[in-house]
Image (cartoon, rainbow, N blue to C red; front, side):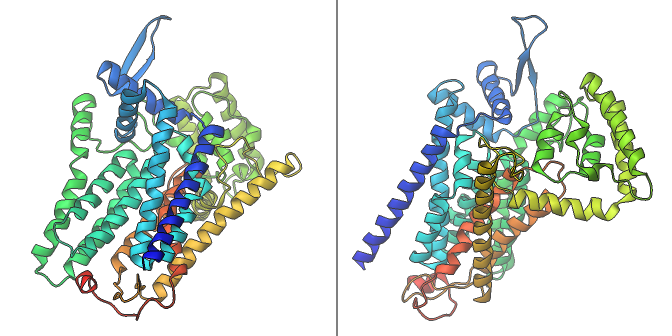
Length: 493
């Protein structure tokens, strides 16, 4: 037994060292300060230097600045950056990447720890190696964005759920690990409210079926739900006091009060957009850069029975020409985009409401995750860049392999009643509600991603902690005890 333990820790340590080296390589060779990174950094710097949660912008004279309060980003990541700036120096993004390296290794370990409790030591090691060597999550430690910390919060929430169940439910410390993880995740990204929607109902259901009186059993989970919501209260009060609006998260289009909400342009964009390349060439260019007619695919001019294709192309060209004359979004321009979108939606309602959203989700999930590499966005144009296209295709195949392994693990886990034997001589515990929570977090996020305008692969990166854990179900040792169900108390006996 001692030899097995030593072997386990030796291989686990090797996985973490390999994961560390991979992430340090990305930081050394693929570091990128994205536009969003600078936006978050601006908020953190303004907060530290001027005591205002806002943006520092150039003033009317060359040497002047203006400080403008904002609510376009939740405070979680600016708080993280502010702490890093205070400890390691203002705008020291290299240090931020170093902290993100540590956070991502914690994510790998937490995913492995969940797999160990569910499926045993062998599965835990496989999960740890899969997570540690995953280039898609590792790449993001070299980009100061919310994704790395969000992945850590997701893994911590599911690990806390498993430990809470094993500890006998109730008001134990693991309940508050789940609470802090989910609350922190929401403070990082607004759509992480879906994590709460997946985890808390599953915990509530598990508590209700535990056999205790309903009000007694559900009280700790209700307290946890309150703990998830409470951190948003100061943010909501601040937004009401500063802007006189009720905003507990952030606006859909990340606009401050009084700014133009590009709803017309967004709806027109959703009538034809699928690829990430369209996000880069068109969506991000609106209100500040030119949008070329040649950047639009042929389906952007397909009007069906309501509008002829040639007429629609002429209308679109005229509209883009008017916009490009100033490269500024106005209410009149946005209204014209909205009118054009309305005609296209009437012509293709099924495509607009079902076909294109599903295609955007597929693009976000299956596209080679090379968006922060020095590779062409149009990776499929083999004749223009054959070597880069070959690398991107292989990267996409690796991404698909991770998805297939994860889904296969879900299938195996479900076939065994969400119950697999964790160790020799132990009674198997059914983690049905935990499984539901993990799958619900993926399904709910997939549904939400079908409603957004822009296709970005990073929006589906949050699937990976679940896939890492579920993949472990494929590597349960066959001779790890009889198949049955029981409680954690029975196991400890």
